[in-house]
Amino acid sequence: MGTLRKYWIWLALVLVGLASWWVSGLDDETPDKHVGQSTRNATATRKLGASVQRDPAEALAMIAKAFAPRQSIAKLHTDPFIVVSFEPPPPPPPAPPKPTAPPLNFKYLGVLNEDQELRKGAGEIRTGESTGQGAGRAVFLDSGGQMLIAHKGDTLIGQYKVLEINDTNMQLEYLPLAERQTLNFGR
Image 1: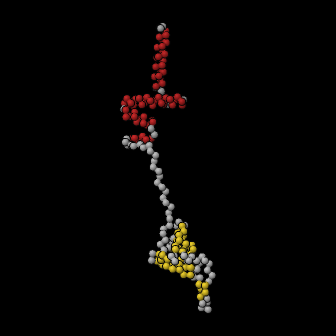
Image 2: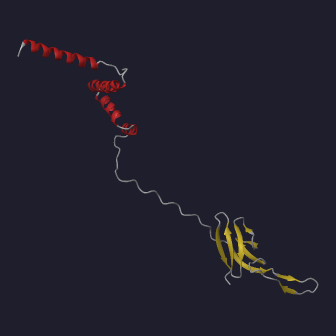
Image 3: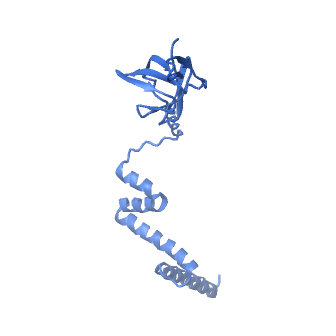
């Protein structure tokens, strides 16, 4: 190999060494955005290399910060013995059942047909026209020791509306839930 060729090889090696030394000395702030990104990565790598030489724990923290989501890092610092399960989460609890009206606490005592009227002057009782809807009926009920008289359309103890009265039962509506209930007379 010629001497001139050896000088060219040595010159090329020196130039490559100087170029690598110059690139390693660049700061994070460069005017070109694309070059700045690769320079930042190179600078971060140099900092990591320097911190490994000084403190391995600091290097591990930098690696964790770079590659793990922030929540996971926080969990790693607080509890190193976290159990990770890959089973699907349990199903949500079933929806609570739809509320229903409480059972009727009325006891049937009797009924009075009010469609009989006393004719004035003659002193006789005559049966009037019955609508069949219980319009002229009054039902006597016991509600926990309290006697109630119910007519069609009345509201009992602020929660039940009398919808219909017939010969064998009475239809009530529980107002808070708008639910119909039947009170059988037991005849």
